Length: 91
Image (tube, rainbow, N blue to C red):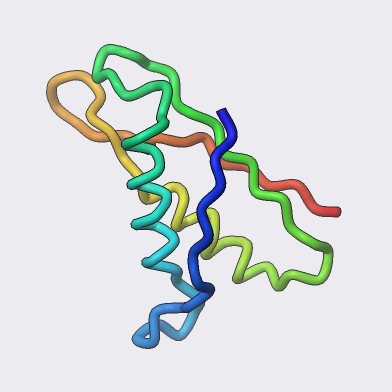
């Protein structure tokens, strides 16, 4: 299922490297509404593919991937795991 949410591009002001906490919150909320693999007994993760232009700085790509990967879900009885397998594709 494809979904579309717009989030303002704002990095955390307390960080030297880019961090996108609003994006992380938006991804988590979207996953809670639309995620496929939410059960603690399901060992699969949802997939996120980040499409970026060739000119996007690498630190912004990493910050965006980190924001997506921050979404976690319970796995088994004892731990949380990332809800997404994240990859990126450049133009």
